[in-house]
Image (tube, rainbow, N blue to C red):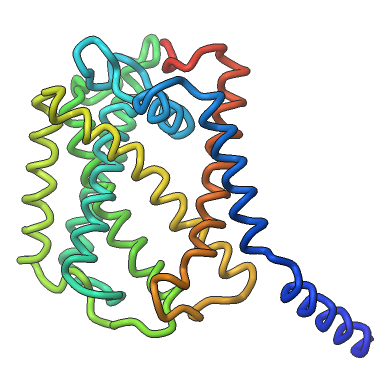
Length: 279
């Protein structure tokens, strides 16, 4: 049995060296992406709609608008993904490959944001249901959805980026990216500015933020799936340079696109429209 196992491992090792997996993955990813681009709505906003379609209910009344046009993600999801993108960029700017746990007070603040997200989400959901008006706590609105979504997104970024570093890199810093309340205050100030910009609903401002929020869906999914990919194939902590991440990130992106395409297809079969749910 041991001899058979060793032969099998040797065979797999030889195949892995002889088969151009990187090229196969690149071509497969390109075909998948091209197919998705062909069959989804036209234009940049159309493609962003198709990304949002896979992760968000896209209810019109719960979304901001570019003029008369609903943006691809609802108010809560817009805040969530913009907050996550902001948190990722901010942490990368503060320090390289930092993975340490923030101060408990920072964790408490971010945990409070997550709790507010849950409360506001439940309250909004009860508001949707007929005959449940006496159970919701307050009148929900898009401003609160945006703010609570942003708060959760910041927390997601603070949890995800250190995990990504620890999974991918051969070496990393044990210092936390958010070392104190001053760094947290800077992040919260920037998040407040982003939310205020969204709330203007000025098309010149909201248009790029809309595309950025949809792009962040792909960024987060790619990060998560690339981590899963390297763990499944047991190649964690093998990478020293950013260029070496091309293969696992491509694999993560391919899986992310496969998920989005599958959900898009299933939802379109079910609803027959690229629009949001109607209640």
